Image (cartoon, rainbow over all chains, first blue to last red; front, side, top):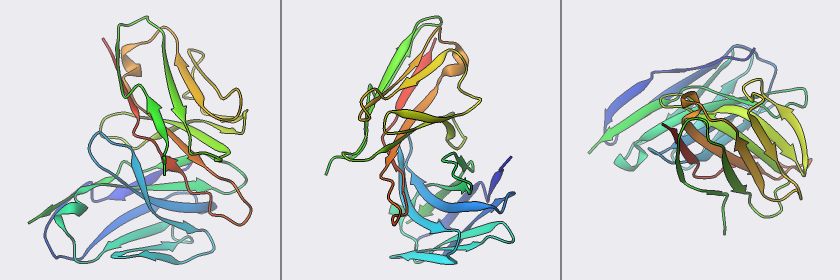
Length: 113
Length: 116
């Protein structure tokens, strides 16, 4: 059974700081890993998707890395802004043709102006 | 550009009543997913459709839950004889499967169910 853990559970940083969110998963036989953002009471917005054959993906100030063998991914946010305040969720899909995605409980980020 | 839409956005019901939620995926997306999210937790996978075929179901989907996607477009999720433990946000997502694509899931805003 795939288990996804996210550390820290909550993070508060001053505006402009660079930060790293961590995600770990127990089964390394993954198809892909995806990072999402969720604002309070809202649905999820996909940020970055990394296929199992890839090591990292970048979009603007966001960079996600994947180390499949160690079961870890990191989301790096550069020059954080108050608008980045949200919960960030990591989600893993296993290989083998399955569509089920297992989510972590998320890291709640607050960027203080 | 219309994203995934879900109706209703909020539903309050009494224990024992039946409820039905609707999800309209992004046009031409052939895959549709349902998730349940309780407060402080990540979403939990419930079920998945490819076109009109329901191909995966979680053990979380008890006999009181049923999902359909009759024409491969919109989908409904019905909960019969609701219980207080069913209170949660129900999220729908869709994706377009192609061999050369990454099959990214796009989520709707969710339906928040409160069972009194």
